[in-house]
Image (cartoon, rainbow, N blue to C red; front, side, top):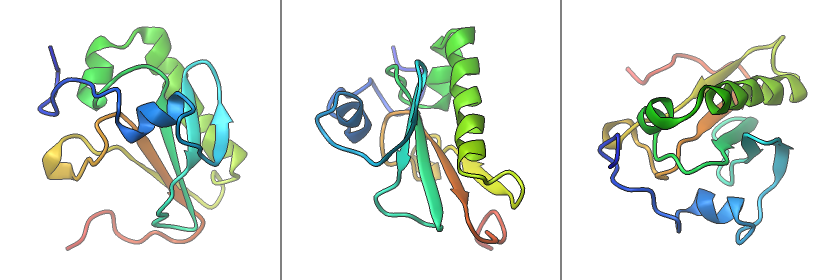
Length: 125
């Protein structure tokens, strides 16, 4: 049963296909818990996506069903990617959309890491 309003996990979503190797990506980082790669339509000079390797539709789904190890491993991977990209000193933004009102486009939980320039206000006014 899905935990969010996004429905069941779709094994044909683009991130599932990247994880399976069917679609290539510009890999930045990979460990047992996560895969990070450059976004194909970057919204900042640095725009990387970090996805868990397991089948989670959204943040709600991930935090409800993921094990403590998966959750910790995933968020440690997000931090490792930011360090690897040398974003800590200048700063960066992480963003996870959840559901249709947020603009979540791919039904596989993911975190965006943005950096490489001053990012301005968080939300449009």
